[in-house]
Amino acid sequence: MDSVSIELWLDKRQLAALEQALTEDGTTVERTMQEQLNELYAQRVPLEQQEKIQQALDAERLESQRNAEASARYAGLHITENGQEHYLSTKSGQEFLDMAILMRRYVRGTFGDKEKGFARCIYGAEEISPQRFEQLAAWRLENFGKVTGLVEIDFDKGLLSALNIMDGWQSFRLKDVSSAAYFADKSGHVNKEVRWNIFLSRLEGKQLTSHTQAPVELHGSRRLRPEEIIFSDEISELDGRLNFYMDCSFNPDEVFGTHVDSADNNNWLNIYAEYDLENSQVCDALKVILCREDGFDYEMAYQLNAEEKSAILDKMGQYCREKYGQSLLEFAAEMESEITAMETPQM
Image 1 (tube, rainbow, N blue to C red):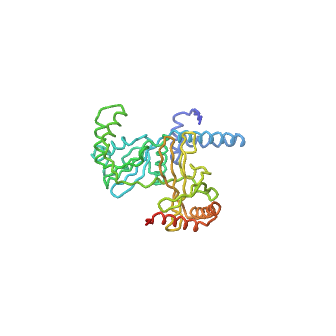
Image 2: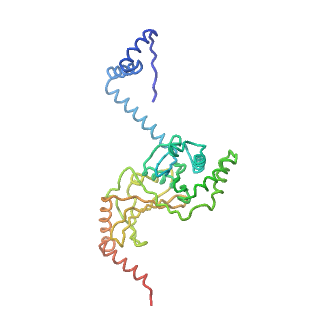
């Protein structure tokens, strides 16, 4: 916004007297003059011209916000300490190594105040919701440069998990991460790539293979609508569940909070609604497979509410009747029969 200043003159004794009088009224010369200038503008400038100027100002402000958001780079942290959980984001461009170095310094007492806790020691950190953290995770996996790093640090269990663009979530003991950060930090190398290589080489083979991470949960700006539930292709069975392939006939970024409907990348989503054969009901979440242009696939989940599950159940029934001439229950019973037959040993 192209703001300009207006210079006014007043004897300093007059100004001092005016400031004293306005202070007693709880205001200032600058505030009062600004209010009077706004009033003068409203009185003398035609309303049509005011509206035209305001529209231009609003458009410029919105464009500025969009540009700022497009250029923003986020890091996310989920911190558990003394039974308390904190979800944070920063715009400092921090990566796994940066967070590991901070964690080590905090544990050793050379960074922050342990009385306050690690979460309150991170400069510029903003508290976010668990849903926003999951959205950052989805963006991280899409690998379009929006999220520089995502970690979960559990001081109570002595574990740290980092979301790797290629390998998904990887977990380590805090002491192993601390040791790797020590060697990377003490190397004296200014070259970031060298420090990264030292850090990763020290963590090689230290991953906790027993750790299992739930699929990233997706959250968009709106819910899935009934008319957007459209199935295609054959219905498949996997692990006691019927998989209905869902056409992406809607804007996935609005519903899932992803970034695939963009010229920034060639990623896409495969979406499946699942039906539990044992319990004869729609599963609680859509299975959303992120297919990245570099060949890596990641499974994510979109939690369904009651209305969405009901709509999906109706659409499953319609699809079975249209494609196979059977009700959903008849088709499910036939599939279960085939599974039983295949699992029964042949004499």
